Length: 365
Image (tube, rainbow, N blue to C red; front, side):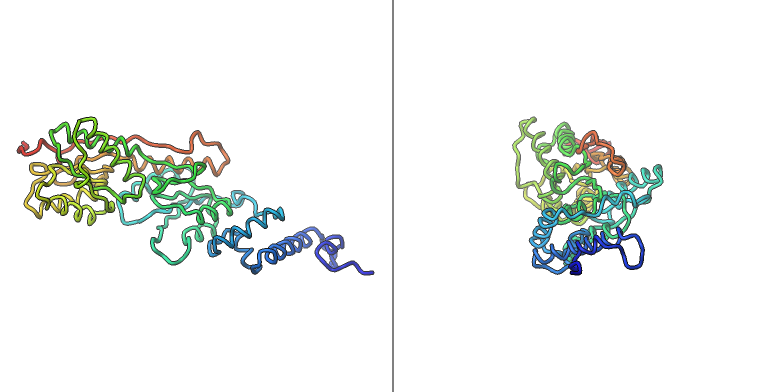
């Protein structure tokens, strides 16, 4: 009897061409295993291949079923890509139109220059019908790792990065990342306290707030700091002068219009970003109000442009470039297999007092 021509029989026979048999037999064995998994999962072989290679264009339920069968078959996944990567990391930002993003990029690039590592910059596409487009891009080229900035990390994206063995560090995460995902942020709660206590110390009692999206961690932390400072001073919290929006000029302007057009407008506004604060400046100007004589304004970030504003802006300094460089260093340690001291790093914020804040209702010299 001739041996049955299945994968196991061929594995025992030498190749007809006389070449070493191990490579060909192992390839055939892997194909046979994938075919068996595809049959058991009720999907096509290309679909199984997509799951193995971390492609995002597979339904979550199908992916879970295939992943379970891969484990049952003890299928050897592609090993960590670290061995064939080198000299390139990905920086993925929620947007590229902000000075905030530029400061983060500066910190990452400074680390990259010191470690002979290139930085590929891309932007998350919000509302795109394409599934996990940025993870597809990252998984398709030889990237050593990813720094994700101020964006939401979905379960599907995380599965894809882990399947491709791509290290990840998150900067200022929009939502809470899994405990094992390293992240870098700033002391947003303390910054909210410092901004509010500064205004309280000047005599303001009706302090409006314009924050970022209400479901972002940094927005909530700054509002919590604001409320804590009010509580400490015995000032009642008034939710009617608290606004959530975005971190851009237009959002700050629109929310400031709402606050300043109230019959009882605030005498000071704490903005969740410097860009929002510039929007507050414009809303006040269009209403014939002067900063700080008629309205005190505090920003958040302390971007380089704040000191050149008219008047120079009081702001909470967020060490953005340092956040970028610390995230890059953490990523570098992950790439090299070094243990991290901590998976969560928070850098200190600092109040920078300039000329946009003053005692309410009094002229400044």
